[in-house]
Amino acid sequence: MVNIDQLAFSYGSTPVLNNITMRLAAGRIYGLLGENGVGKTTLLTLLAGLKKPQQGTIEINGENPYERHPDFLSTLYYLPDEVAPLNETARQFATRTGIFWPGFSRDTFFGAMKEFDTDPAQKMNRMSAGQLKKTYISFALASGATLILMDEPTNGLDIPSKSQFRSAIMKYTREDATIVISTHQVRDLENIIDPIIILDRQRVLMNASLEEISRKLYFNYGTQLLENSLYLEQTPTGYIQVCRNTTGEDSKVNIEALFNAVYKHKDLFYE
Image (cartoon, rainbow, N blue to C red; front, side, top):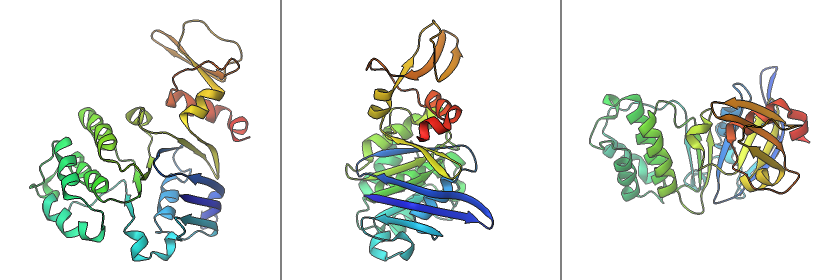
Protein backbone atom coordinates (compact mmCIF):
# COMPACT_ATOMS: atom_id res chain seq x y z
CA MET A 1 0.00 0.00 0.00
CA VAL A 2 1.26 3.46 -0.96
CA ASN A 3 0.07 6.39 1.16
CA ILE A 4 0.77 9.94 0.00
CA ASP A 5 -0.35 12.65 2.40
CA GLN A 6 -0.24 16.42 1.72
CA LEU A 7 2.89 16.03 -0.43
CA ALA A 8 4.56 19.19 -1.72
CA PHE A 9 7.66 19.75 -3.81
CA SER A 10 9.15 22.76 -5.58
CA TYR A 11 12.11 23.50 -7.82
CA GLY A 12 13.44 26.71 -6.33
CA SER A 13 10.53 29.15 -6.21
CA THR A 14 8.50 27.12 -8.72
CA PRO A 15 5.98 24.78 -7.03
CA VAL A 16 5.35 21.52 -8.89
CA LEU A 17 3.33 19.43 -6.47
CA ASN A 18 1.21 20.86 -3.67
CA ASN A 19 -0.98 19.13 -1.09
CA ILE A 20 -1.04 15.85 -3.03
CA THR A 21 -2.95 13.16 -1.14
CA MET A 22 -3.86 9.74 -2.53
CA ARG A 23 -3.72 6.00 -1.89
CA LEU A 24 -2.43 3.34 -4.26
CA ALA A 25 -3.52 -0.24 -3.68
CA ALA A 26 -1.69 -3.49 -4.35
CA GLY A 27 -2.54 -5.54 -7.42
CA ARG A 28 -3.40 -2.55 -9.64
CA ILE A 29 -1.82 -1.00 -12.74
CA TYR A 30 -2.21 2.78 -12.40
CA GLY A 31 -2.08 5.11 -15.38
CA LEU A 32 -0.52 8.44 -14.37
CA LEU A 33 -1.65 11.13 -16.82
CA GLY A 34 -1.16 14.86 -17.09
CA GLU A 35 0.17 17.64 -19.28
CA ASN A 36 3.90 18.38 -19.53
CA GLY A 37 5.25 20.01 -16.39
CA VAL A 38 2.54 18.91 -13.95
CA GLY A 39 4.99 16.78 -11.93
CA LYS A 40 4.50 13.20 -13.13
CA THR A 41 8.23 12.41 -13.24
CA THR A 42 8.79 14.32 -10.01
CA LEU A 43 6.12 12.23 -8.29
CA LEU A 44 7.71 8.99 -9.52
CA THR A 45 11.17 10.02 -8.30
CA LEU A 46 9.71 10.98 -4.92
CA LEU A 47 8.06 7.55 -4.68
CA ALA A 48 11.39 5.95 -5.61
CA GLY A 49 13.17 7.85 -2.83
CA LEU A 50 15.36 9.80 -5.25
CA LYS A 51 13.98 13.12 -3.98
CA LYS A 52 12.90 14.21 -0.51
CA PRO A 53 9.42 15.65 0.06
CA GLN A 54 9.60 19.28 1.14
CA GLN A 55 6.26 18.95 2.89
CA GLY A 56 3.99 16.01 3.66
CA THR A 57 4.83 12.33 3.72
CA ILE A 58 5.12 9.24 1.54
CA GLU A 59 4.77 5.84 3.14
CA ILE A 60 5.18 2.61 1.18
CA ASN A 61 4.37 -0.52 3.16
CA GLY A 62 5.32 1.34 6.32
CA GLU A 63 8.62 2.66 4.92
CA ASN A 64 9.81 6.15 4.07
CA PRO A 65 11.32 5.72 0.57
CA TYR A 66 13.81 8.57 1.02
CA GLU A 67 15.56 6.64 3.80
CA ARG A 68 16.44 4.09 1.09
CA HIS A 69 16.81 1.05 3.31
CA PRO A 70 18.26 -1.83 1.24
CA ASP A 71 15.43 -4.19 2.19
CA PHE A 72 12.92 -1.62 0.99
CA LEU A 73 14.79 -0.88 -2.24
CA SER A 74 14.77 -4.58 -3.09
CA THR A 75 10.95 -4.36 -3.32
CA LEU A 76 10.93 -1.36 -5.68
CA TYR A 77 12.00 -0.79 -9.29
CA TYR A 78 12.06 2.59 -11.03
CA LEU A 79 12.34 2.68 -14.82
CA PRO A 80 13.14 6.21 -16.05
CA ASP A 81 12.28 7.50 -19.51
CA GLU A 82 15.94 7.53 -20.58
CA VAL A 83 17.94 4.34 -19.97
CA ALA A 84 21.67 3.62 -20.16
CA PRO A 85 23.21 1.75 -23.15
CA LEU A 86 25.67 -0.37 -21.16
CA ASN A 87 28.73 -2.08 -22.61
CA GLU A 88 27.51 -5.57 -21.77
CA THR A 89 24.95 -8.02 -23.08
CA ALA A 90 21.41 -8.03 -21.76
CA ARG A 91 22.10 -11.48 -20.26
CA GLN A 92 25.18 -10.17 -18.42
CA PHE A 93 23.23 -7.12 -17.20
CA ALA A 94 20.45 -9.31 -15.81
CA THR A 95 22.90 -11.67 -14.10
CA ARG A 96 24.96 -8.85 -12.58
CA THR A 97 22.08 -6.62 -11.49
CA GLY A 98 19.37 -9.16 -10.63
CA ILE A 99 21.11 -10.14 -7.37
CA PHE A 100 19.94 -6.86 -5.81
CA TRP A 101 16.31 -8.01 -6.08
CA PRO A 102 15.69 -11.24 -4.11
CA GLY A 103 12.56 -11.91 -6.16
CA PHE A 104 14.34 -11.56 -9.50
CA SER A 105 13.42 -14.32 -11.98
CA ARG A 106 15.75 -15.18 -14.86
CA ASP A 107 12.93 -17.18 -16.44
CA THR A 108 10.68 -14.13 -16.42
CA PHE A 109 13.45 -11.93 -17.85
CA PHE A 110 14.17 -14.29 -20.75
CA GLY A 111 10.44 -14.90 -21.25
CA ALA A 112 9.77 -11.17 -21.52
CA MET A 113 12.76 -10.69 -23.84
CA LYS A 114 11.33 -13.42 -26.07
CA GLU A 115 7.92 -11.71 -25.93
CA PHE A 116 9.66 -8.56 -27.16
CA ASP A 117 11.63 -10.48 -29.81
CA THR A 118 14.88 -9.05 -28.39
CA ASP A 119 18.15 -11.00 -28.22
CA PRO A 120 19.60 -11.24 -24.67
CA ALA A 121 23.02 -12.05 -26.16
CA GLN A 122 23.22 -8.64 -27.86
CA LYS A 123 25.29 -5.89 -26.29
CA MET A 124 23.07 -3.15 -24.90
CA ASN A 125 25.14 -0.33 -26.41
CA ARG A 126 24.54 -1.84 -29.86
CA MET A 127 20.78 -2.07 -29.48
CA SER A 128 18.31 0.32 -31.03
CA ALA A 129 16.51 2.69 -28.66
CA GLY A 130 13.44 0.45 -28.78
CA GLN A 131 15.40 -2.75 -28.09
CA LEU A 132 17.18 -1.09 -25.18
CA LYS A 133 13.91 0.11 -23.68
CA LYS A 134 12.41 -3.39 -24.05
CA THR A 135 15.41 -4.88 -22.23
CA TYR A 136 14.86 -2.61 -19.25
CA ILE A 137 11.11 -3.26 -19.26
CA SER A 138 11.85 -6.99 -19.24
CA PHE A 139 14.15 -6.52 -16.26
CA ALA A 140 11.55 -4.44 -14.40
CA LEU A 141 8.93 -7.17 -14.81
CA ALA A 142 11.46 -9.84 -13.79
CA SER A 143 12.69 -7.95 -10.72
CA GLY A 144 9.96 -9.36 -8.50
CA ALA A 145 9.42 -5.85 -7.08
CA THR A 146 6.03 -5.19 -5.52
CA LEU A 147 6.16 -1.53 -6.63
CA ILE A 148 7.22 -0.82 -10.21
CA LEU A 149 7.38 2.78 -11.43
CA MET A 150 7.63 3.33 -15.19
CA ASP A 151 8.14 6.75 -16.76
CA GLU A 152 6.96 6.83 -20.41
CA PRO A 153 7.87 3.17 -21.06
CA THR A 154 6.39 3.13 -24.58
CA ASN A 155 8.53 6.05 -25.80
CA GLY A 156 10.77 4.73 -28.55
CA LEU A 157 8.65 1.65 -29.20
CA ASP A 158 7.17 0.98 -32.64
CA ILE A 159 3.57 -0.20 -33.10
CA PRO A 160 4.29 -3.96 -32.86
CA SER A 161 6.45 -3.37 -29.77
CA LYS A 162 3.64 -1.46 -28.06
CA SER A 163 1.41 -4.50 -28.55
CA GLN A 164 4.19 -6.68 -27.13
CA PHE A 165 4.46 -4.31 -24.16
CA ARG A 166 0.79 -4.70 -23.33
CA SER A 167 1.08 -8.48 -23.64
CA ALA A 168 4.20 -8.61 -21.42
CA ILE A 169 2.59 -6.43 -18.74
CA MET A 170 -0.46 -8.68 -18.56
CA LYS A 171 1.57 -11.90 -18.65
CA TYR A 172 4.45 -11.13 -16.28
CA THR A 173 3.08 -8.69 -13.67
CA ARG A 174 2.86 -10.15 -10.17
CA GLU A 175 -0.68 -10.33 -8.82
CA ASP A 176 0.32 -8.46 -5.65
CA ALA A 177 2.37 -5.78 -7.43
CA THR A 178 1.48 -2.11 -7.78
CA ILE A 179 2.55 -0.63 -11.11
CA VAL A 180 2.44 3.10 -11.84
CA ILE A 181 2.91 4.02 -15.50
CA SER A 182 3.37 7.67 -16.42
CA THR A 183 2.45 8.28 -20.05
CA HIS A 184 1.29 10.69 -22.71
CA GLN A 185 0.45 7.79 -25.00
CA VAL A 186 -2.89 6.81 -23.48
CA ARG A 187 -3.95 4.80 -26.51
CA ASP A 188 -0.88 2.58 -26.03
CA LEU A 189 -2.10 1.58 -22.58
CA GLU A 190 -5.86 1.32 -22.94
CA ASN A 191 -7.18 -1.99 -21.66
CA ILE A 192 -4.31 -2.43 -19.16
CA ILE A 193 -4.32 0.67 -16.91
CA ASP A 194 -6.92 0.80 -14.15
CA PRO A 195 -7.25 2.99 -12.04
CA ILE A 196 -6.57 6.34 -13.73
CA ILE A 197 -4.71 9.18 -12.01
CA ILE A 198 -4.88 12.61 -13.66
CA LEU A 199 -2.59 15.34 -12.32
CA ASP A 200 -3.04 19.04 -12.80
CA ARG A 201 -0.51 21.61 -11.74
CA GLN A 202 -0.22 21.05 -7.98
CA ARG A 203 -3.28 18.85 -7.50
CA VAL A 204 -4.84 15.47 -8.26
CA LEU A 205 -7.89 15.91 -10.46
CA MET A 206 -8.77 12.22 -10.49
CA ASN A 207 -7.76 8.93 -8.89
CA ALA A 208 -10.51 6.49 -9.81
CA SER A 209 -11.07 3.01 -11.18
CA LEU A 210 -12.68 2.49 -14.58
CA GLU A 211 -15.72 1.06 -12.78
CA GLU A 212 -16.08 4.26 -10.74
CA ILE A 213 -15.60 6.40 -13.85
CA SER A 214 -18.21 4.51 -15.88
CA ARG A 215 -20.64 4.72 -12.96
CA LYS A 216 -20.43 8.53 -12.93
CA LEU A 217 -19.80 9.24 -16.61
CA TYR A 218 -21.40 8.02 -19.82
CA PHE A 219 -19.34 7.73 -23.01
CA ASN A 220 -21.51 7.99 -26.11
CA TYR A 221 -20.21 6.91 -29.53
CA GLY A 222 -23.24 7.76 -31.65
CA THR A 223 -24.09 10.20 -34.42
CA GLN A 224 -26.55 12.41 -32.51
CA LEU A 225 -25.38 15.40 -30.48
CA LEU A 226 -26.39 15.18 -26.82
CA GLU A 227 -27.36 18.07 -24.61
CA ASN A 228 -25.12 19.02 -21.69
CA SER A 229 -22.15 16.92 -22.77
CA LEU A 230 -18.98 17.66 -20.81
CA TYR A 231 -16.76 16.93 -23.79
CA LEU A 232 -17.41 16.46 -27.51
CA GLU A 233 -15.06 15.17 -30.19
CA GLN A 234 -15.97 14.49 -33.80
CA THR A 235 -14.82 11.23 -35.38
CA PRO A 236 -15.12 9.89 -38.96
CA THR A 237 -18.21 7.90 -37.92
CA GLY A 238 -19.88 10.36 -35.54
CA TYR A 239 -18.97 11.70 -32.13
CA ILE A 240 -17.37 10.73 -28.84
CA GLN A 241 -19.28 12.51 -26.09
CA VAL A 242 -18.67 12.44 -22.36
CA CYS A 243 -21.71 13.13 -20.19
CA ARG A 244 -22.82 12.68 -16.62
CA ASN A 245 -24.24 9.19 -16.20
CA THR A 246 -27.74 9.93 -14.98
CA THR A 247 -29.31 6.62 -16.03
CA GLY A 248 -26.76 4.10 -14.69
CA GLU A 249 -26.08 2.81 -18.20
CA ASP A 250 -22.76 1.04 -18.84
CA SER A 251 -20.34 2.39 -21.45
CA LYS A 252 -16.74 1.83 -22.49
CA VAL A 253 -14.40 4.44 -21.05
CA ASN A 254 -12.35 6.26 -23.67
CA ILE A 255 -9.29 7.40 -21.71
CA GLU A 256 -8.27 10.11 -24.16
CA ALA A 257 -11.76 11.63 -24.15
CA LEU A 258 -11.84 11.29 -20.35
CA PHE A 259 -8.57 13.18 -20.05
CA ASN A 260 -9.84 16.00 -22.29
CA ALA A 261 -13.12 16.19 -20.36
CA VAL A 262 -11.27 16.42 -17.05
CA TYR A 263 -8.97 19.17 -18.29
CA LYS A 264 -11.91 21.10 -19.72
CA HIS A 265 -13.75 20.98 -16.38
CA LYS A 266 -10.92 20.82 -13.84
CA ASP A 267 -12.76 22.28 -10.86
CA LEU A 268 -15.80 20.09 -11.45
CA PHE A 269 -13.77 16.89 -11.48
CA TYR A 270 -11.57 17.99 -8.59
CA GLU A 271 -14.62 18.59 -6.43
